[in-house]
Image (cartoon, rainbow, N blue to C red; front, side, top):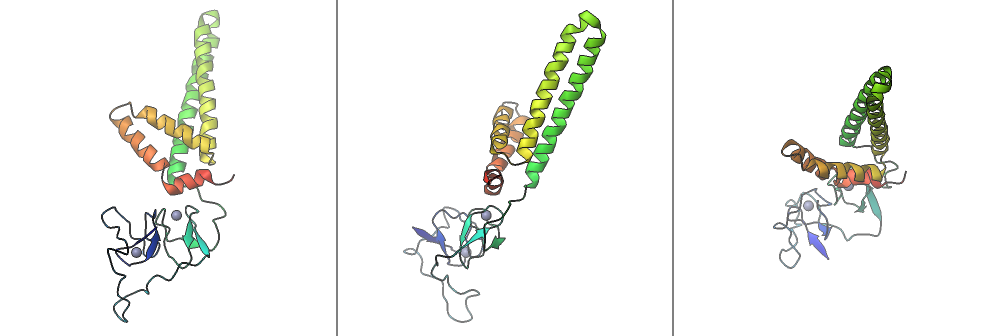
Length: 203
Ligand SMILES: [Zn+2]
Ligand SMILES: [Zn+2]
């Protein structure tokens, strides 16, 4: 089934979020099907753009999220980007939000490793009485290293890194109110089509 853009009249895939012709964002109320609305006027001088041509078998690709876009159309139906090319993107660039989250994770890891090294060193210097501190320091260092591996996997676009980050965001939800807000924002962000495409592309 197809639907028609209320703004420009272009024929769109039924699951399109953005009009492939003009980039209009569909909502439930604005979606109109052919039976409910006549095609827009194509009289000379009244339409800025010609009516949608029949969709050919040729396909272009969104350069932001890699989704196929019908030939001759200007916008990605999934993410609304107008960066459309004839071939699938060779490499989807790392979204800036992923860079920010990854760098924050690296900073957190470094803090753990730093604290662990300090406590561990202190414990070692105290001799037998410092054993508990030495062990505690070691635990911090191990957590820091694991966290660092996870941060690097996340930055390089491993999908398990994205899944782990989402699990972390779900746990964050319990930390009302700041953690709840942060968790919702991170979960929303990591499920955007373009961000998902970055993690899903072949490595
Ligand atoms: Zn449109
Ligand atoms: Zn797209």
